[in-house]
Image (cartoon, rainbow, N blue to C red; front, side):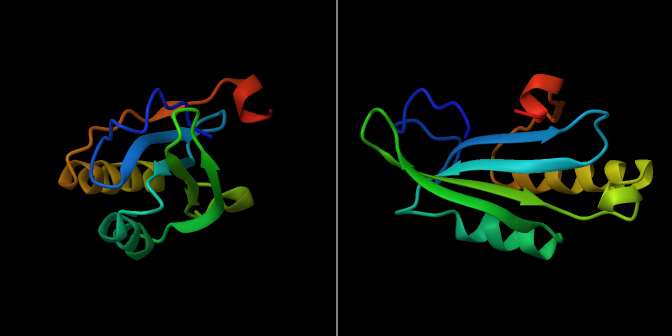
Length: 120
C-alpha cells in the first residue's frame, strides 16, 4: 500500500499515487498505483496491459480521510532467471513506462526498494 497524505490531491485523473520500484538488485520493476475506484484511470490501465503488464494485486481500502482507494500492483515478466528482466529489457521497459506516465502528466522516479521493504 502506498503512503497517501490525502485523497483530495491526485497525480492525474483517477490516480492518487504512483511508485515504480524493484526489489534488490533492481532490474525488474513493478508498478504500484493508488487509484480512485469510483473514477479509475481506464486509459492508463489499458495501456499498461498493451505494454505487457499484468495486474498481480488489487485491494480496496478506506483512507483515513474517508476517501476510497484501490491499491493496484502490476508486473511484467522478463526472459531472465525467475522471469526477471535482463539489462536490455530493463532499459526498454523503463523507457516505455516513463513515456506512458509522462503522457498522463506524471513524472516517475524508479527506485530500488530497501531489503526490509522488499521482503516485509
